[in-house]
Amino acid sequence: MTAPIQPSAQRIWDHCEALAKLSELDGGLTRVYLSDEQRRANELVLGWMREAGMSARLDAAGNCVGRYEGERAGLPALVLGSHLDTVRDAGRYDGMLGVIAGIECVHALNARGRRLPFAVEVIGFADEEGTRFNATLLGSRAVAGTFRKEVLDAVDRQGISMREALRRFDLDPERIGEAAKRREDVLAYAELHIEQGPVLEAEGLAVGVVTAINGANRYAVEIDGMAGHAGTVPMTLRQDAMAAAAECVLAVERRAAAEPELVGTVGKLECLPGAVNVVPGKVRFTIDVRSPRDGSRLAAAADLVREMQAICDRRGVGVKIAKTHEGKTAPCAGWLQAQIGEAIAAEGLPVRKLPSGAGHDGMAMIDLADIGMLFVRCEKGISHNPAEAITLADAETGARVFLRFIENFDPKRKP
Ligand SMILES: [Zn+2]
Image (tube, rainbow, N blue to C red; front, side, top):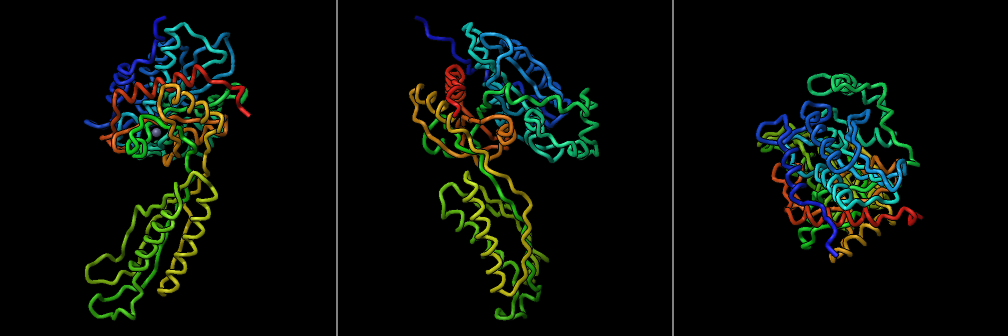
């Protein structure tokens, strides 16, 4: 017996390269929602879907939707997907790899003449990053039926509203609701994505099973002290906002490090008035706390608010803490984790489970169906950066595992 036809890693590679050329940024990659570059990307992707044996169309939100019928037409679908938009000066695999690998898996199924007891759909979401309109997951929210109409009034840097941008893209903003799928038509949502972190590489693994997309809390903190002359105000009489902030930053680090999988970051800090000879009077900084468990995230966030308050009280400075974002954990369904894990094991690889620290389309798709994710190793965990890199061998391993998961997918194991 000859070996079954496998996904072509070379074609995945070539297609990633082809999409990477469609950019508004010379010498880099920036492709935003409803842009000319996206229009050209859609043409390529819809063409690849058809070559793979799918029917393909653009939906009402500008997503590319390919469909490979099952043993008979009209069966509910296993939906695969990821996004085709990018951040500014992006890498070429974040999002695109998942769309292209999904198409390639169907290509292999079709070449084998294999039909499954369910349909397979591949969606290239038009917006996940939110680069243009500062609102994320626009493509997947439209498919999940949770698109909020207010977002149509969001404007880009040029002052063009999303409503207008849809019209210029030959889409009707009033009909965006038509992109929504019905729950009964979707068996599950599965996504292949680069890890965007260093864990798999550190452990020498090509792939991993995602347990959850971490929830996140974000805060804007402002500490009010008293500015003064750096030479004349004695140490005992100072209300140094920066020294208080420094204690807060270390408190964030200490609290996050105390629990596995909890992460806490102060990524932005501004010191005023900001002079070498002035005691800082005001400091503003941000906090980002994430965890795959909502309870752990909420407890850490509450502890930090209390601790920062105590630090500032003790130092005699004022503090204002404003929550700027709160997003729940999107857990990957146990039955899908199990089936992705079995596909990895069947390829003779160890099954490593890990949470996703970054957000993904699954955060929106979970309102429509159970979600599962397969991570592929990327070099040094670098992402949202032109240095983003994977190997041809890992693209191949990822696609083989993904195909094995698809062919053996059993919706009856859903509890
Ligand atoms: Zn992504």
